[in-house]
Amino acid sequence: MEALLDNSDTSYGALEGAMDEPRKTSQKSELMFIAKSSGPLIITFILQFLLQTITMFACGHLGAEELAVASLALCSFNITAMAFYQGMSTCLDSFCSQAFGAGRPRLVGVYFQRCSLMMLTFTVFPMFPMWWFSGAILKLLVPSEDLAMSCQAFMRLLALGAPGVLFFEAGKRFFQAQHIFNAGTYALAITVPAHLILNWLLVLHPTMGSGALGAASALSVSNWITCLVLLLYAVFISGKQCWGGLEFRKMVVNWKPMLKLALPGVIMVEADYLAYEVMTIFAAAFGSTALAAQSIGSNVGTIVFQIPFAVSIALSTRIGHFVGVPDISKARLVSKLSLMLGVAMGVFNFTLLSTGRYILARLYTNDKDVIGIASNYIGGSRQKIGSYINMVAYYIIALPLAYVLAFVADLEVYGLWLGLVCGIAVLALGEVYFAIKADWDRIVVTCRESHDH
Image 1: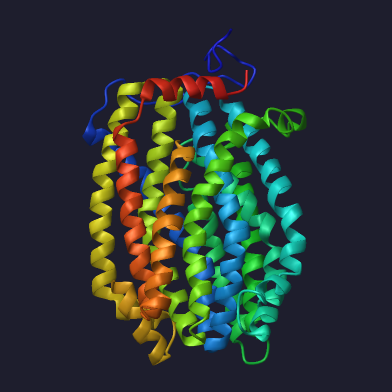
Image 2: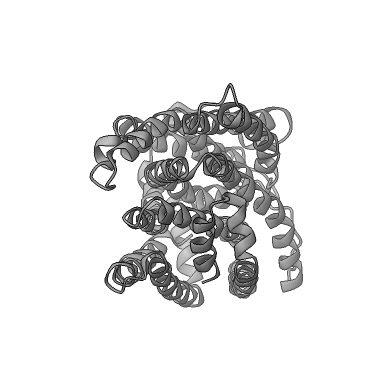
């Protein structure tokens, strides 16, 4: 049978020298490439997260109750939408980068379309009624009926912007596979200032502002702006070489290989999101002040995690290209570099959080009680394996321990974060072990078996 990634196949626009790189490589050259690629991605992820962070800022300065509403609504949206989009789109980190590395650029566009349709099918259409009537579910999880119904109103507005988030997540992978790492940065560089203006007008303006619902409206509009700007980038600047037009027949077939990576990717990312969001729901039992403080801690933690997350995307894209070529020695080299970079970034994040915790907390609110609680605990392409490790680390270790420390040992929010720290330590050790033990020959074989003929 013909090799699935044979570069001579022109049915998807085979491209000679897709990777455009030297034959020899070294740790230094790869570090330089990763640094160059990671810079735009770091900015992209931080700017993307700033959209929700600005929403939290605006609601936090309205009051603790408004911050609690925004926190719980965004928590629910992240669990049921954002985690699904990011998880399912992880399959494109493998499929698109391998296809481009193998010199089949049009296949990148096919994978983008197929994954986007899959996400629409499995997330937006089934989830929309749940978002619209989310108050009935939230009333079972939080003690305040008013809080639950306010969150429902917030969620209804967020749901209108959900498709924009979906296409942006898939679109980022479409560009990253082509080594175009700054497309998302440019899109968000336009969206974030627009989002600031929208929040001032719809939330904080003395006459036009409509409180927390204005913040939800601003975020929904901003999500669509980001998606549309990314589309304009592809049309007028770069990225068209991997687009062969809408190919509906190819969109609706051969979902199984993609789902084999997408579903474990959802579990992996969902496990991460749920751990933080379940902690937010736990914190709601301790009152609005504790909930607001927990929200600040989660937001600050997520912001600083954007740096290693962006670097990991650059690394996985690089490895995907080498697997697609295939060049096992270079893939192994980049894998080893990822472990070194992980240690360095861990030290950086620890230093940042331990020394700047009070300053970070004050950015969100002027409430002294919230600042006091938050500052204390702020200081404190193998998706299936990743999903298993995440499930064990978060749901067998982190969350049960967090519950015991918070409710049994009466440490409240501090206990939630102590439990999380223990779980993440286990998660890190597990991922390091499987990275060291990777069977690269088998990975290349799996790559060839998964792609379209």
